[in-house]
Amino acid sequence: MDASLDRTRVLLEAGIALSSELSLDSLLQKFVETAAELTGARYAALGVLDPSGEALERFITTGLDDETRMAIGDLPQGRGILGVLISDPKPLRLSDLHQDPRSVGFPPGHPEMHSFLGVPVNLRGVVYGNLYLTEKAGVLDFDEDDEAAVVMLAGQAAVAIENARLYETATRWATQLESLNEVMNALVTEFDLDTLLELVAEHLRELIGARLVAIALPHGDALRLAAVAGEGAQEYAGLELSARSKTMRVMGRRRSELVDSVLDDPEVEQEAARRLGARSALYVPLLVRNEAIGVVAVHDKMGADPRFRDEDLRLAEIFAARAAVAVELRQRVARDALERVLSAQEDERRRLARELHDETGQALTSILLGLRGIEEAKDPEVLRAAVGEVRDLVRSTLQDVRRLAVELRPKALDDFGLVAAVERLTESFAEQTGIAVEFVPNVPPDARFPPEVETALYRIVQESLTNVVKHARAGHVSIVLTQKNSALSVVVEDDGVGFEPARARDGGLGLVGMRERVGLLGGRVTVESRPGAGTTFVAEVPLS
Image (cartoon, rainbow, N blue to C red):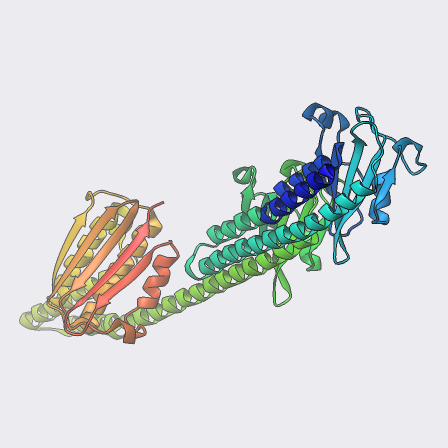
């Protein structure tokens, strides 16, 4: 009676402990230890079945020391007596394992075992695994009471395992949703495609538990790794994969693939696989309107088994869909930006052509007429007057040609840098318009910056001054050039009539072109204005 009460107490305590444990690994270990205590078994183990229900995915033991575990070696394959419970999940008691014809023996280093009790762990027809108990204390067989107690414990454990798996699934889903939310936010806010793809690769690697995740995009006739996350990411970034690679074949077929062993796949280029250190792989094409524009390649599940599962593939497909949107969106933005740049260039060419035709062309025509007058002049006074007129026309035309040349590409920008070029631009602007301009360069006069940065900021100043003439009706303009925190900024402020930025929709101000020009360099343009209070343009470009 005392033994029965003691067993009931252990069962109650086990039920409480199992129901309060949410970590699946801790729960399974607790279950095995309690079963051994409940039956007096020297050794106990729990074989957890994989989702197919046909093989063991993990094996939790108690009673074995670390040295013995190392000697036994790899995870059991579920053959022999272990396989009997997998194929026929019913309680099984044996007096001696060695005497049963279904036994296949033990591997070298395995301790001697005779008496045996096996019980399935199931709930509502779902088998989660099997509990194996051996070597009952006192060299006795396991009896009906042991079987009944362990069956009851297995029922409690099945409920606890299901709850723990549901908790782990909910936690995993929450993590996945959080990662997807971060990626979706980046789709809206992150301009740089490589940075965005690295974010996708890193989140996917963490969620799947992979050693390496790479995103490959077309590069000529091959593919280039545009983003890599995991071991050796910096070493593999920019690596090119040939047209014969498995990744390229997956892109051509436009369907996902799981590869349990890259060594055994005839389509895998073994040299590239060795360089990546890949054992297993998961490939998902980036699809946009059923057209493949890249591939996500994932290598080596972390842990004892490097193979990926179907749930890993589904998760990779979700992230690949986001990456495909990012690639397609950024490519479309780049195309649109290029079209706008080309359109703006054509508009500028048309404007210059009109000025050359209407102003410079007319001036040259006047010079020709003046020269004809000189040829026909007889009176010295008339000759001197004609020469003077032609001289003035030549001087004026020369100034116009120089102004057009400066607008096309100021020589000072190439020879002396941004500060000198802006100084000459503001001097010329003040002379031509009568508007006072104050230029404050908070950088050394001879400071040089990347050519694309100097060109972009010079054009911003040029466009801003054009806006002042066309729209602002200002009397004073202030331009401040500053380098701070690895960025170069220019502020153009006028005291003109101002406008309402929210209602502007560019309105001939060139705001779209300014933003695109600076955005291509990773910078930004902001505008502050209101009617009657002037306008401030701020452009900031990173220097690294």
